[in-house]
Structures are given as structure tokens and as C-alpha cells.
Length: 279
Image (cartoon, rainbow, N blue to C red; front, side, top):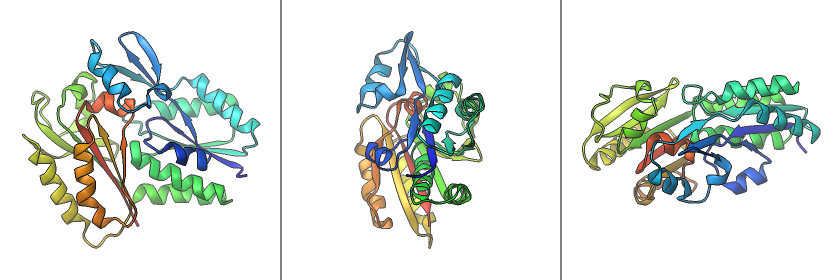
């Protein structure tokens, strides 16, 4: 059994079987919907959160896991035999989770390395999964940290939204560069880069997303893709279309997964993300 344990938060979009097989610990964030607090862990059923959000009177509010929950989790991992915990979290520009994790590890007095992935969703999954593989194979702490940084440097995350309404209401519009916040009904494709959402393309109509896809494919060039993931909020029809067009460029099957409540709160319905890790 590995003495290095990998911990992450529930903003990650990952297959449950990978969590179990690689012994990954996922600490849930929380979502407040019309005065009722939900653990993100209880909102994983397909479509459950989206239905709650659509029926809510106001935009749900997300919050990072309590410091105490992190402390308890770190203590449990040590009690189970961990000698060191490597925690990989959602970018600090979208959540205070990484700092709560750091405080929790300090309270618990646990040897831990806390990492800001600079990403979220499946781009964070790339780091978490590869780190867990190295740890499970008996790699050293230095090996695990080196793999995380290698994956991070070779990853990209693009997100397409059909409305800016949630980003505006949630106060995230100030972190989206190159967009006029009053234009709520335009489609926007952004890249999460250098800890901020940077506008890549904007326009009206679904052709905006296909235009971006053509540009993305053209920019792959000679680079070989190690893995690619697609996440979605709402219906999966666009995500499946994206998969069909991108699969020829990827040797392994592209994971198409519903993103979690944390990301859906900010993107709204009919959003997608394409996340790629190059070799």
C-alpha cells in the first residue's frame, strides 16, 4: 500500500471507478440552494443539481469545504497509514479551497503538500490520476510532485458557455477578460490560463462553438494528445458531437462526463469544457 495518499476536492470531474481503483480521497464542497445547504457529494446523480438550480429562486452559492472537515480528513488518512498527503485543488481564482486545505493540514499536524492545480474539472483529474498512479506504484514524493507539474504544464482547459448570466450573478464576470458583461446572450469560449478565464471567441448562435472547434483542431499541429476529456452541463448532445469530431486525434477513448454542481453553478446550462493533456 502506498504511503503517499492523494487528496482532491469535488470540483474534479472524474469517474467513480478511478477514485476507488486509485484510492483517491475527494473532499466535497458545498452548495446553498434557496437556503438549503447540500454537500456536493450528494449531487452527483445525473441531472440532479441542474434540476435543483433551474427550480431555485436565486443562483446557488458554492462554498469551499470547512477547515474542520479537511482537518478530520487529514487525520483519518494518517490513521490509515499515510506518511504524506498530496492535495491537488481547484485554482484559487475560482475558490478558496486550496487555502482551507492548507489550514486543515496545519491543524491536523499532518505532513502534506498542498497544490493549486491552476485548473479544475477534468484538467484537474489529469493531475490527480497521474499522481495517484505514481504513488500507487511506490514512487517517492519527489516523483509524485514532478509528475503533477509535468501534467499541469502540458494541459489546457477550454470552456464554452451559452449565457453569461450565471457568471455575472456569481461575481465571476470580472475574472473573464475581453467580454462586455451586458451581452448576456452571446456564446463565449474561454481558456482557463494563468489563473484567469481569457476569452478566445465570442459570437451569436451555436456556430460559434463549431468555429472554435475548427480552430482548436487546426492548432493541435504535430503535438500528440495523451488524453482528452469533455464535460458538459445540461444535455450531452453537443458534448457527443465534440467527441465525434475530436476522437480521431486521440488514441484512447474520450471521457464525456457531466460536470459537477460547483462548475455548473458558474457556467449555467448548455455549457461544455474541452480539456486536453499533451504528451
